[in-house]
Image 1 (cartoon, rainbow, N blue to C red):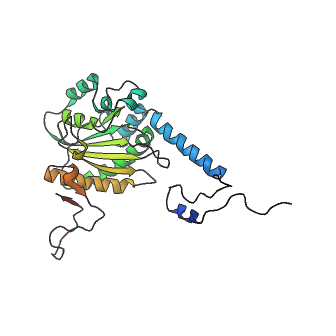
Image 2: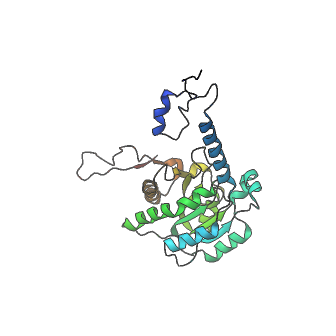
Image 3: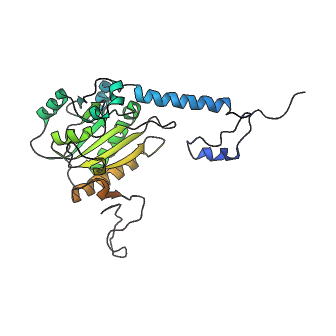
Length: 276
C-alpha cells in the first residue's frame, strides 16, 4: 500500500526564510535534513572555502578601476610580507606589513604635502568580495565627494595582495594621508562569501590598535547597499576630519535620530555622528 504521508515534514517557521538568509525552518526527512537543504549547505560551505583560497585577479581589478574612474595611472599594486596563502592564514602579522619592494614604491610616489584620504583595496579573506564590490562601492563614494562643497585630496589608489586590515596604517603613513580607508574581503559566512568590509582610520601609522578604527561591514548586493555604505562612510570621514579622531571616540549612529543642537531651532539638522 502506498502511503500518502509526505517524505519531507515542513517546518512552520519556513515562511520566515523570505526575510533572511539564515538557515531556519528547513524541515526534516525522518531525523535528518531534507536532501535538497543538505546540498545547499554543502554548496555554501564550498563557496566560503573558495572565497578564502581563490586569488584576487589584481590585473583585471586594476584595469577595471582605472577605466571606471578615468585614472591617469593604474592603481599601485602592492604586496604584504606574506609569500603564499598558507602563510597568510598562519601568520596574520606578516599580512599587516608591506614587503620591502612595495614600501620603496610607495616612498617614490608619495606626495610631500598632506592628502585627505588614502584608499586601499585589500584582498583579505574573500577575494570574491573585493573583485565584485570594489568598483560599485567606489563609484558611490566618489559621488559623495563630488557632491560635497569641501575639496578632498586623494592619494593614489592602491591594491594589496595577501593583506590584513592593519596594512592600511603603513600605507596611509607612507602616502602622507590624514585618513586611510581599507576596503577588504571579510571572513566568509555560509550565506555571505562576498562581504566587503570598510575600515576608516584617522592619522594612520604602523602599530595602531583596532580601537582606532571605524568599521562598516557586510557591504554587498544582498547586504548593506553601496549607496548607503558610501553615505555612512562619508559622514564618518567628514566628522573625522573635523574632530581629528576615529575609532571608539567617533561613533556611527546613523540609525538614531540624534539632533545637533536644539531640535526646535529653525534650520536644525540631523547629526548622524557623535563623539565622546
